[in-house]
Length: 453
Image (cartoon, one colour):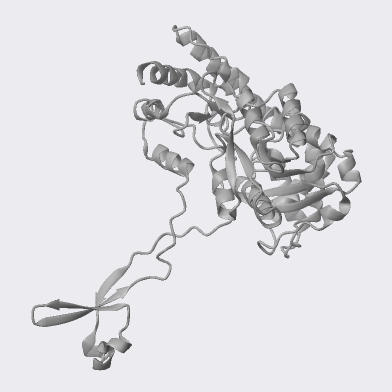
């Protein structure tokens, strides 16, 4: 889930020194009086000659640089590499079998229809495009869900998943002061930045078990139980990023039991609905199960992956409340209004039965290609590695990412020796892999795992 925060990120300006131009009348004798000394002017003595230096210290000097985006660094290094077999498995964006960016056909059609309609570009209301908010809530919870009919869902359009999460973080910080957000370890790299920026306190719950390259379910449950009552538990609705490891349906039920017992509030990040399994309903099952129990729920959505609208920055924050009155009170003053173009694309596709059917078919195709690559990679690893290592975790994971279990030194070997670019936590994006390069990647993984400690 690589994006921009709704926060100030500024480079730190450099302070500079310059000689003062005495001969131009910019300095008079009076300025050397102690009572009138300019704090930005410093006198330096060199024997009998005194020189006056102006120190232009910026009042923005104290602003720290925002943390660098690790994915951007991977992509830049990949571009600079001229090796013919190089692979970029860092970026979380879909690629074709030819490893090229893909614009969905249904998005092209919706774009064309918008152009033909000649829609205006007027400002949207603060909560976003009404037609978009309606279909996005129905898509996540189901058209016939009682919470939709009873108007207990407050939906606000946000700047994709990142902006929607940031709105939720501001909501938590403002209206639930002191409440803690629990996030999985590991999690998507931007989650911590978002809550830090909102000044919402957070801690981690155990999720990944390096011994099994699977879910540490017991640790997860223990940490959720130990959290202060009324905490917000951030859950990946499907296709956990970065691990690709999801709880089973039975494990989801236990997680819901514990959250309900502790009076916590479930907070879902839904970045891959329809993109993980190829089914919108299957990928929304976890969220719908919590809602069906009568729980109040927060859910952030993104259309970057499932519609390929990466640069349109289109998403939403949904809050399921116990009453329609509470839902009606939720708004946000962080910015005037969100962008309209991507919202209209989503509203037109989901609201048109023919386009919606076509979208489902394209999602199945994209998810299917990633599944095929996953299976081919597993087959290649299993056939090439004679050590007896169990690589079945690759098949148990879901979505565009796979957690390889490689450490930083092994990841460095993947890049330096094999020209495979990836994040240093061992995550690879299968969306950036083709069937033709699965055997090459398997060779790289096997070499790095067995020959680098």
